[in-house]
Image (tube, rainbow, N blue to C red):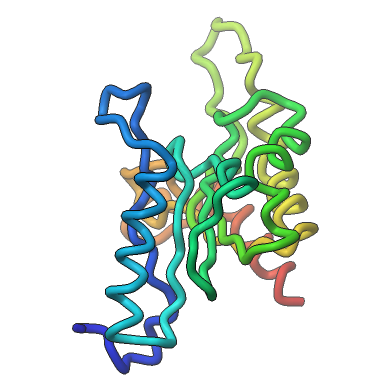
Length: 191
C-alpha cells in the first residue's frame, strides 16, 4: 500500500538471493517458492495493478532452471538472476545459457546484482600469481556481452567501499578498477 500510485517505483523484487544453502537455511521446493511468490504478486497487484514483480531463482538468485517446467503463474512478471563469476567455471557462456539465459527468449530477465570486474588483487611480493587472474579479468567483458546479447537488463553491485564486490574505493566515491569497468560498460550500453 505504501508504494501504490508511486510511478517511480517500477519493480518489486520480493527477495534478494533466496537460497536453501544445501538445506542448511531451511528446505523449500520450487513449487513452494512459486506459491509464496504468486501470493505476494496478488498482494502487490491488489494495491498497484501496474507493478512489475521480479522473482528470483534459487542458488542466491542465480538459477532459473525451474522456469522450464513451472514458471510463475502470473502475467507481467520478470525474473532475476545474479550471475557472479564464481557460480560456474569457465567457459561461462554455455552454463549461463543452461542456468538462466534460456529464459530470456520467453521472459523479461534482469541481472539485479553482479560485479567483481576489476583486475585481481596482486599477490604479496614473492608469492605465486593466482590461477584465477585471467578468469577474473575476463569475467566483466564476458558477462556484459552475454547479457546484452540476450537482451537481459542489468545492474551492478556494489556502490560501497566496504561491502563487496566494491565499485568505489572510498566515501569520496573514487571508482576502483571494477567501478571503472562498470562505468565504461554502462556508457557503452547507452550509445
